[in-house]
Length: 103
Image (cartoon, rainbow, N blue to C red; front, side):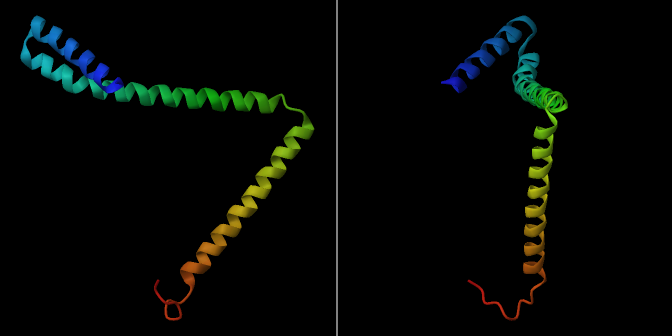
């Protein structure tokens, strides 16, 4: 349903441009308008991510010492797990291929 509404909306705008300025500008609008919409969507998503990051930082700044200590402990545990996974994957890559059989 949304795609149909978008297509009709785009055709109405392109038709208005065609009536006012001709077929070439209408074609340009029909091609460039979706690209501008995608660029705008990416910009909005980026700004939303920035606002979320700022909000998180502000909340962390005002968090109690105990809360910050728990977050640091969780971060340390996560880093240790990621290091173990990296070592396991590195060992798999370095293992000789002669002893392994393909699936």
